[in-house]
Structure formats: structure tokens, C-alpha cells
Length: 231
Length: 308
Image (tube, rainbow over all chains, first blue to last red; front, side, top):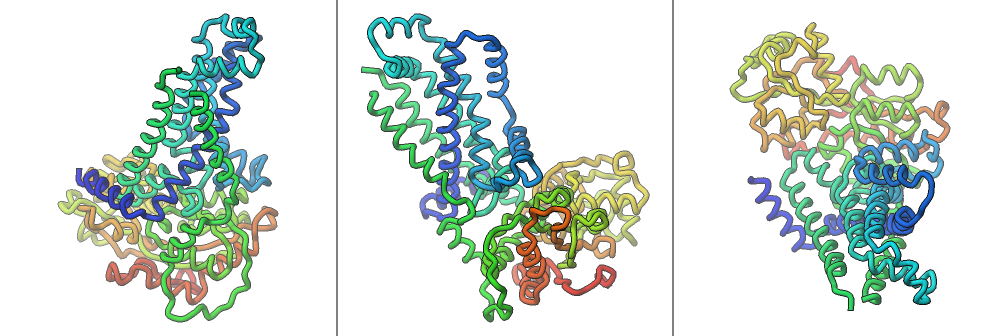
């Protein structure tokens, strides 16, 4: 209990005094996980739509693969990406290992199945005949997609939240491919592991509280957008 | 509502741009933080080193990181040479493997017995003895196994084995290797011959916390124990034997076997670790805080001379 209380006090102190290290780590966490989420949206939403509406061989197989990927342990993804990017690996010459870019790549791999899966489920929940109806009403392809995205809004925003929540809270992949380098690739979760491993439980708790507060703020904004009634 | 959604997406765009930044350049705040962490040397560096720049990967052990020593040394090195060091703190076993695969440029490790294999295979070259401290056996103050006052290390290990519990790192680290060697020297099979021996698979700090909670014995390096002592109930139950020496060496990863190795940077790092000024900082590290030396600087000595 003492570490919890000390952690809370330390968290308030760090936030209130504008601790430079803390803000830097928190900002880096948002940049890395935010980028990974955006990339996974760019790929995952169209892919989810195609999986939901498409009729092709292997669709069920692909959906199963996506659903498996939604529960993939981040540390396995991290190990795989590490083996790809490390100097002795196939992409070692790109010199990406232990950089923020490597972390974005790993987190993208974690978030993408979540976004694809949630989008596919949301689109499948819409009436089957919606695209045809829109076509009859004279909407072009871009407009049709836009209206469908609007209708699937609840699910797609849930996809964003699941994707962002999944990567901002994971530690295994970020630790492995980022290396937890101070001032370079250290994010909130890996900093928490470092402090815990050093036995500095109050510091670790403070960082955990900051992470929770940050995740809550992001989700609050997304939920506000999600729950707004269309006019 | 459409416009709002679009705005939300647009406002997120700078993240992509920010993400494209150069990873090797620390942000101004980070640079400021490292400057603070560096000790103020009494005199300016007497050895002008040509600025190399660039970056390198140092594979090392969790104990150098957890004690805070590298937080002091790495900024010093970067200031002198301009080389950015990516410190990857893993167990000694993993650090040696990274060296053997050419995934690191230099290694700083503490398991002479394990290092030999990599030196023999010529994966690690130009090794230098850097420093040592010692391992200690710690346990609950009540000392149920009556380890305190043991005549020698073998007796102490046998006492622990008979009563337990013992918490092991179990992570193939230098400390774990040292522990296994101690059982071996006492003719005890750690898997079957030790009562309630459990492995955490975690770093030294975390393992000390586990041992503390379970009122168990464990083997720790003195530096990590001292830095966590105020939160622990564990006492030192045995110390001082020669085979408890914890010896750190630095190596360059062989550029002949691994052409991608940044050999100039790695050589500069190993040279830095044994330079007189660095050795002085190592010897003084946290000495005032704990009233004793955490590390004893050993540049130029031979392993056989230590602990005499």
C-alpha cells in the first residue's frame, strides 16, 4: 500500500512540476503508439471492409487469421520483428533496430489485426443492401464509402480505441525492438519495467498512473465522438 | 459531425511527421537530462579524443544498468567522442549471444567462464579487464539455515541447500552463471539438491524483492543490494570468498567475423572504459552515498591478481 500512496503522490508531483523527463516519455509514447494506430487504420479499415463485403475464396481462412492476430501476444510480435530487423536478420542493413521506427512497425503489426477485425464486424452489422441502395440513390464510390464509414462509426471508433489501447499498454514488443534507450526509445510501459526492475516501486507506480490518465484522456475524446448523435 | 470527425483525423496527422524524425538525434530535453546526470569532473578531460560521431550498440548486463553506473559513464563517453551509445541491458548470456551474432558492436559483461567460449571462437576480441566488485549471499535476518559464521563458501552453500528456500535469477545472466558455479563447486545439483529453489527469470532488483518477500536466500552483486538495501529486510549472510568476485570485462565484437561491426566506435568504447579518468569515476561511483566502493577499478590488472 505504501508504494501505491507514494506513487500517487509522486505522480501528482511529477505532473504538477512539469518534470521534463516524464513529459518527454509521455509525448514519445503518444507519438509512437499514435503513429502505429494511424498506420494500422490506413491499412486496417479498407482491409476490414474488403473482408466484410468481399466474396472470395479463403475469406473465412483470412478472417480466422485476423481473429487469431487480435489476441497475439505482443512479445511474440516483438521477437519476430526483432529477428527481422536485427543486424544478422534479413533487414539488418536498414539499421532500424532500436529506433522509434522499429517500435512503430512492431506496434503496427499488433494493432492492425484489431482494426481489421473490429472494422469487419462493424461493416457486417450493417444492412447487406446498403451499398446498392446508396448506388441507386446516385452516390459515387467515394461518397458511398463515406456514408458506410459513417454508419459503421461505432465499430470503427471502437477499432481505433482497441488498436491504440492495445499498443499504448504493451511492453514486450517495445522493449525488444526499441531497446528501452533512455532519451530515445523509452516509453511509459518500458520505463515502468525499468523502475520496477530497479526496485523503485513508487516511481513505477507514478508512471503507471500517468499512463492510465493519458489513455483515459484519449479514450474520452474518442468516446465523445463515438457517442454523438448524428444530426 | 462529418467536419468534426475529419478535424480529429487531421489533428492527428503531425504524429506521422513527428514520427519520421531522426531517431539517432536525442531531443533537446534528453540532452539536457544526460548533462545533468554526468558527474562534474574536477579537471577538464586531459585526453583529447578525436570526435568520431555516429552511434554504436553496447550489449551489457542488467547490473551495470540497475546500479546506475552506465547512466554516468555513457554520457561521459558521448561527450568525449560524439558517439551515441545504444545500451541494450540484457543478461550476460544474451549479451554474449548478441556479440557472437554481430548484433552488437561492443559488450560489457561479467561471467569470465562464459566469456571464454566467445573469446576462443574469436567472436569477441581485444578484451580488457575493467572492474570488479563481489557477489554476496543474502538471506532473512533470522537466518534459518544458519549460514552466518560458516567457515567457507562450500559449507555456506550446503547449509542453504539443506534448508532453503533459495531464489535464483534463472535468466542465464552473469549472476545466474556465478550461482550455478557455486553449486557445482559445492558438489550440489541445483535442480534436485536444493530445498525450495525457485527461479524468477528476472533482473537482480526484482529477484531481491522476491527473495525479501519470501524470506529466502539469494546471490546478489553488492552494488544492486546496497542500492536497494533500504527497502529490504535481507542481511548479508556470507561474503568475502575469492570465488565470489564479480569481474567485468569489455570486448570489441570481431570485425573480421562480423563485417558490419562499427569497429572504431567499439574500440573507442573499450579504450574509454580503461582510461584513467573513467577508472577514477568507476572507483568513486556512489562511494560517498554508501560509505564503501561499489566497483573497484581494475584496468591493467590480471584476473589472477584480483582479491589478493
